[in-house]
Image 1 (cartoon, one colour):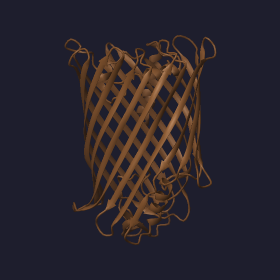
Image 2 (cartoon, rainbow, N blue to C red):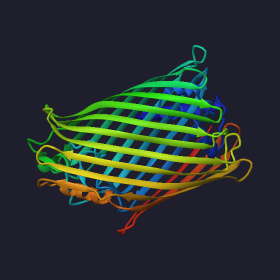
Image 3 (cartoon, helix red, strand yellow):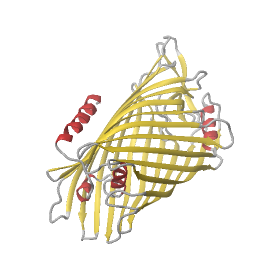
Length: 493
């Protein structure tokens, strides 16, 4: 997978000799993408209907997060390097968009000892210990996406496209019990759009996703280590790592099927794109020949994007998703359920638009999340939380010279939370994990961020840029916060 990503990046660099660039600075890059409704829809066929500028971008960056304020399965410090690139090209009438990325990350002083590199609420089945000492993870990730749309057909009424995505991940934890985690996530999504008339278009995307993953546990000393195999909200069974009857590798086999429906309305000074999505699938957990559990998933989502004004200088985004998960024993018996609602909305105004650049961007947004999990089998339990963060942002695009510009932005917001509820009817060696998570989700905190991007156009084929981003999270009732920063350099060609 890594060799494929590196080869793709070299191809992008080679193409700079063949195609000239349309975008000359980061402000044009951002505005070009934000106003492209079909490009952001997930329907590859929509690329054929976009009048976007073309670009190719390769970048290298370093990021760091540090501080005590993090979730129960987080780390005190996270740092890493990333190499990536993205592009949009027109090849003989075919629109092709691609993204590639290589990430190498280190996590230091992690809070709890788990078999999974990334613990999520929709997956209760994993091995965990209440770590007496903090530990670290090493993580590598390779990600590639490519979307292509054929030229419009049948009098510009029909367009067809295909999107492919592949992601490979590997992670290593050396704390006892040691864990080696690996996964490969693949998705294929053919799509189509159809013009009913000049002002009304519809679209459809079919999606298939397959994701096998494995967590292999070993004992560094060779002596058996007692661990808890979780079954949700604190329920567990005791297993051993190491020794003659140690746990076998845990295998996760996930399949998902999805359907997206879109409607696009075009008017003289306004256009909208609304979408409705459905996903269904299951993840089966295997330990040797035994099936300790599985998760049945159903997701429904609604999203909308809007461009207002003759210049498209008002942008509205809205999306809400409901993720329902049923926790089942290997026999198929229902043991629990988890529902998650995620909501995002933002409104942006661009001023001083000239061609594909602007002077100011300003706006406001809201992120909200509601979680409700319950265990119906003995021992029973429940966990509920609700958080929401309103925020405002402001950006200024300033020409420095004929060849260079500086794009600076700031964003501030406050996170509000209801008091989480965690009840568990039983004793558990990992109960403290959920208590800590309830405490974290119930915190009010202030968040601020700022970034600056300097672009320099060297010639008609090449522009360089550098970006610095910093941010801070500060809880209002306890000491200690969290700081994060990113430094990146790149070329657009």
